[in-house]
Length: 203
Image 1 (cartoon, rainbow, N blue to C red):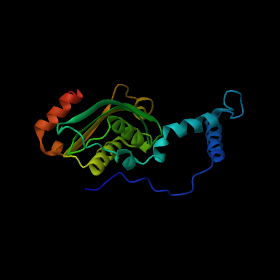
Image 2: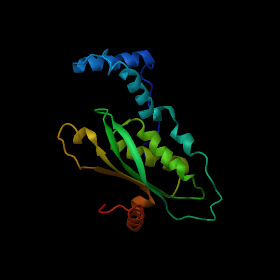
Image 3: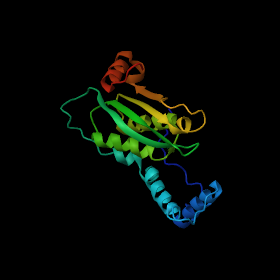
Image 4: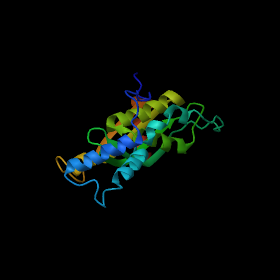
């Protein structure tokens, strides 16, 4: 199976902060406004600082995040589910937010990982330019590759502002994607158990 957990390739040298701020000034001028007016003079700095937060996932290694595991599980081998993980990302086509929830589950095979690491893994991939399908696959594939459990399930339900605030203007619409690996792919009862535990209706 192909993996989607590699770090994005560095195609060119990263621009300086000053170059990034100048790019924002250019966009402000392109809108027809004056980048030097009082309300906008500090906007390039604020936008760049916001981008540092929005896209901090490029600075993190998702594999390293999961490498510390625990084997003292008391022989626990049932499903581990972390549901309703708040997800904030940005569509790579318009750089507009997509906001929703992720539900993540795995079937341990001798070792488990701290649950905060699962939430952090979602954030690492979400804080990059994304499409929801790839984001879903990256989360599941990384858990499968690093933890090597008996199965992994990931479902993301998110609203895309690129279609609610522009384009077709369809508010109230959300997109649901899933990635089922191992036992979750082959066992329908297990899938149903996951959907029930995660509180996912109508999937």
